[in-house]
Amino acid sequence: MAEMKFRDLSHLSTLDDFLDEEGIREEVTLRAIKSVIALQLREAMKAQNLTRAAMAERMQTSRAQLNRVLDPEASNVTLETLSRAARVVGRGLKVELV
Image (cartoon, rainbow, N blue to C red; front, side, top):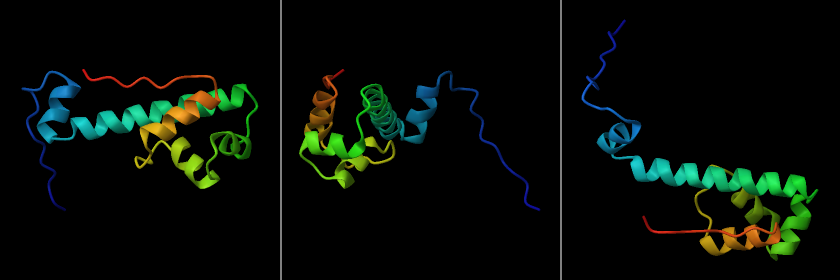
């Protein structure tokens, strides 16, 4: 059986340092943001007893597109679509450069 080798990570003090070293910080951050937005939309829909069919109709989109909006793993969703979904549940979408 092959012996597992571990890298020395003692020089890293934060998760951000690790993500930067791996070159995946931006990707991980964007996936996390999309996951949070999808969760917030699902929770708002539940609180308003809004079905996926009704939500898609109010957004004037297909259920397939709504499923991508609500899927935390789907990254191919436009800001316009996310904003429209937020408006349907009485919320807004805030995007900013930092």
